[in-house]
Amino acid sequence: MTRVQTPQASSQDKGATPGWVSFVGSGPGDPGLLTVRAVELIESAEVIVTEAPEHVALVRSVLGLAEGEDGPEIVDGGFGEDGQPLTHAARAKVVVRHGKKQRVVRLMTGDPFLYASGPEEAQACVKAGVGFEVVPGVSSVSAVPAYAGIPLTTKRHKEMAVVTCGDKVDWSAYADDRTLVLLSGVGSIGETAAALIEAGRSAETPVAMTRVGTTTEQQTLISTLANIAADARAARIAPPAITVIGEVVDLRQTLSWFETKPLFGWRTLVPRTKEQAGSLSRRLREYGAVPEEVPTISVEPPRNPLQMDKAVRGLVEGRYEWIAFTSVNAVKAVREKFEEYGLDARAFSGLKIAAVGDKTAEAIAAWGLRADLVPSGEQSAAGLLEEWPPYDDMLDPINRVFLPRADIATENLVAGLIDLGWECDDVTAYRTVRATPPPAPVRDAIKTGKFDAVVFTSSSTVRNLVGIAGKPHPSTIIAVIGPQTAKTAEEHGLRVDVLAPTPDVEVLVDALADFGAARRLAMLEAGEPVTRPSERTASGRRKARAK
Image (cartoon, helix red, strand yellow):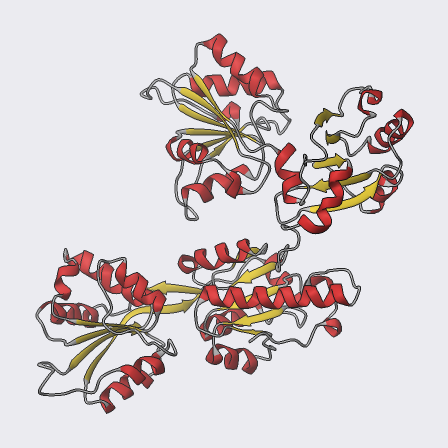
């Protein structure tokens, strides 16, 4: 696992190369706002000195590190060994000490040279003779208002001013109609608003206050100078927040794009194998959801590998006319067996390849192969059988099919192939076993309705989730990938709300987003506040069903 050290506990490798410090801005919160240069430096860093607790997860995500996998040394730049916050001077010493002999990324929230301690730490590097560079980050000054749908300048409003509210400010200097962007202004907003009104600004001047901007926890309060203090207290707005004052705030009514995403803020359970959850979670994030991956299935090698070994040897020796892959895991299992034997894709020469669907075909293509048969209709074993050619002893020199599958696969495909005149070597290529239960807080969230939606991608994920964590609460939206998964969910007492029109994880997420958009529109048309499913009672759950 990644080593997280406090500065006092860190040490240096005497054999390390001469060091360098890169002051890298991580942006306002959304990991997608990291610059290309920032990613390059994180990938090559020996030491990363963080500023915020969430930086550890950000680094591991950028590097694609699995749980327990080693990465660069991570040093907590916020707190010392005693748990007390580090001063600017103490933090600068930490950066310099590592920077003398190692490649250091000093990861800083926002921009290193804007409202940050970057200049002081860079000066310490200069004094110590340590080379450095600065990689600007997307600033919260512009990014947070943009994510709130508020442009800072328009054709009518061409001037803006950024004001840090930490020290005493002469607000009479801002009595004109410039757009104001306030930093650290939450606690003093009452006094600020009163001073601006006294200076000559209209009490009805629009004000927007956005907290934790660019993240899926973003919340924007719209008010006026006269009412912002009371409204902020009522809404319990707390730092970090960016405040925008001026007529540009009114444009949010038509330009709000982030908080209006169909699944914005939805805490969504992804019960899948850990290896396969990535693309689904990325798609959910695009719609504003907060995916939480809970492994329910562990993919393991077969208990007896001899059958698989024999089949692979038969493939190399030309024993088969066809190989049929019914999952991405089957492709992975055969590929790993090939690598174990020192074989490559050339061993498939003269062999016809079938794939159950597009995703499986993509996994085959990534191996440098092309599937000869992919169902044009339903992407399932049944769809594959509909288009599978019958055995013809005049056209087919060999009548045998290699079928590497999971240990729990149904027999329908085998029976169908036999009916078509083929002989089938049905081989267990991998086993699917139930994963260990998730932590108690996750199990509690599942049962009590703290998740807004759960996305089931197979019947086994339904059975295993219920087995290791219990049934999702009735208020939770249930989305499934196909009819068989829907049937299994209903057999376990779950009401299916969303059924993907085709068995594809991205199509499934799109269908859930359509459901969320329709639900949001219905609330707006009814004059109701837009809430998430977890914020409503089970009796208030809508009857809609996405097709």
